[in-house]
Length: 567
Image 1: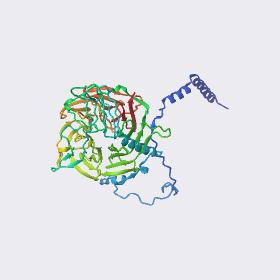
Image 2 (image 1 turned 45 degrees about the vertical axis):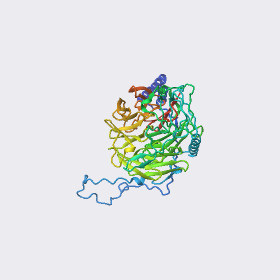
Image 3 (image 1 turned 120 degrees about the vertical axis):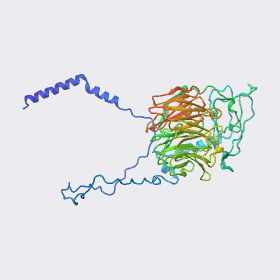
Image 4 (image 1 turned 90 degrees about the vertical axis):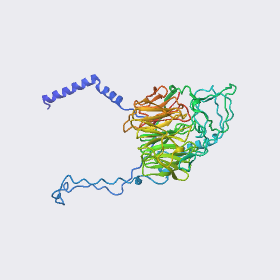
């Protein structure tokens, strides 16, 4: 029989339930919970292989102490005089780096980490390589004052350039100036020289002519095009005769949902476009040693166009598409290895091994048999791919070299940036066996993470953690201006690196507001910001397509890549 207390408690419960139903609290709570749940990201992403759990053959034995089993201890306890603070012992030796890396060629099957097959990727790369070899032999370029600004030209090979608003105001014969071989040879005094070098301003065949107007007297309006049989632009232009017109309209850039994908699982340190016109393929290297490829032109419903490889055991510092051979990609890593991905052989060949980390790597234009990379802290190494040995080594900086770049007009002029707070210009023709002398040195208050030449080769942009972008210009890069920009990042975000666009008008660099700042070197300030709700992370590393004008990629710490295109 219920007591008075129980009857009163049940009455209170019934009254509270009626009040809750009247207020409709439970329904509102369920709606609030559904609204606060984080939506699942349905964008493209790589698919890693699922490892099947291995069945243990031996039975699992659960250990029990003597105390829990009710038995006496088998020892008399700690000895007399035992101390909780013994003398500090020497730290154990560091683990052997060679034990965690494979010092041998790595087959595709062993390096591939995707869930599906890499067959489509191999067929795509080989098809692009064959097509570029066929189309790169003969080309026609229209150069006229009536051309729209920054129209991309036909390209089949790496030797082609991004032509942007170039005008020739006089009828000229066919330009067929062959570029030099670009081989480095050791001179009598131990200096590096360029074979077949011209005393005039040397414009490489892959020079990116950016919004350049070459002044000519006696213009002839009846001739509005220049026809070429060999697609190698290489006419000498004096620097003082070059003027820049209006640049690319950055307002026409947009980000679409289908141009967002997660290419690699870790933080991206390097992102690169395949340097071939009308081909949208991106390579990215992350902190975990992965190299991912994303084919934006993939139309297969069962294939998202993302292919993941794992050729390194440490962060990937650089990716270089081999000149004149798109089926080969060179990668360097902090694990001290340089590998050559050969799609035809289905293998990651081992090019070079080092006990020190490799922080940066580059190739000189028209010299596909040499590699320039930073080994350790401040050491620049020139490696001959054909001979398989080092040609020269120089101590250029007091700390690691973060970037290596070459002037597109004068490939013997090299720019390096370093954590020691300097960015330097070097002349490879006058670098002897001893420590070379710099042509120009730019000093920053903190580490400099990039130094890149403009498409015309007339300017240099440096990015430093001291919150400044340096712009060098002038005949001998003697004019220096500093533009303020917040470049501070944390340990989870890759450092910012400002890159030039498709002409000398703008520099693109990320900001901490999940956007991309467009900086005008002429106005010395930020003139525009690229932002989109689809870009949910900071695009730390940026790359502009060298041949498709108006195509820009931003890579994040989460492995995502955002590709901006023209509307």
